[in-house]
Image (cartoon, rainbow, N blue to C red):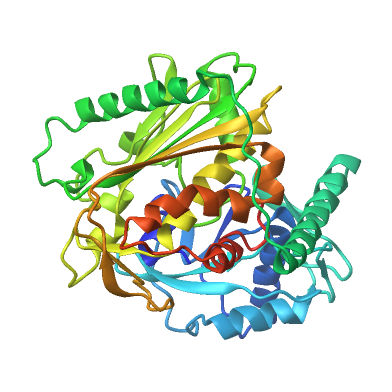
Length: 442
């Protein structure tokens, strides 16, 4: 489940793209505004999921936060889903989050649209000038929400529905029999090359943070985690411009608000070319912008498809909870799966990818207690880690990531959880959290 902090950049760094649509305040007691919201949600669910952000208006300088007019009722999750039920067939359910803007103090509704549909969603009634009955809407570059016009647009939509149905079938099979994923053989130096790439990227981050105070959150004073991925056998991109386009393609699906390999709009945080890499440092200090370790990423990508990212622990920014003491039981599943799925989407843009090598490193674990920050899991903070650091490595084919993500993730993360007083990571936990996270948006 995304946190409010994870979603906050959608309003502080507004950038409308295929996976995010921005609207001014909508009065969901109005038929026209219900239709406007429903059309956007239909297009996004057909796109594979995304977010609708309310309360940002287009101005000369771009999208700006402004207060909800007193004449417009408060937007609730029930009202959002009532609007969708009125216009969409088949119906689908959206989650709504109230996300405060740190500067204006305005609380903006952020609607998370799932991507679980196994058939195209259509409109079931008219609203003149906004939405037409029995029409299918998709997201198109611009971005805009319109009907499919070409064979390729229809094929993309139908293939996405087929994949969602395929996931349902695989989950049903998995509930009957759980199997292990056969680890693929890699060239002898594949993991060594990935380790060297990660070491070089970490050294670069060390240079960037050298002038920050020792206790500055972007220096991750209480520890951090890293993820590295390499596309084994991939034919390299033609250059950094080509690589940046491939990264943008991999970003087309947003599983949470604060995804790995972010492309931010603030100039100091936006990706930039450095030597033969594309990299970004979201931990760079920016005036009047607060930062915490869990949202101060550094990442880097190479033309051959190698990826590296590092981030502090979100648990260290919890109000009233001392940093360096907690380790949430579900977050590693979400964060590592997000990275692995991003790498698999990037692999789709390359030729001859035999497998994806994975390397994860966790630091600052000693003394942290395994817990459930949300209280959704029966973990009570009794299991603490006596190990300060652990490195996890595996590899999987793109097909294994599509078909056996639960097994890949369980095998990879089990040694991490065992450091917490031999905690046995349940396969069911991995499966349930991945289902919550992806909601069919694969």
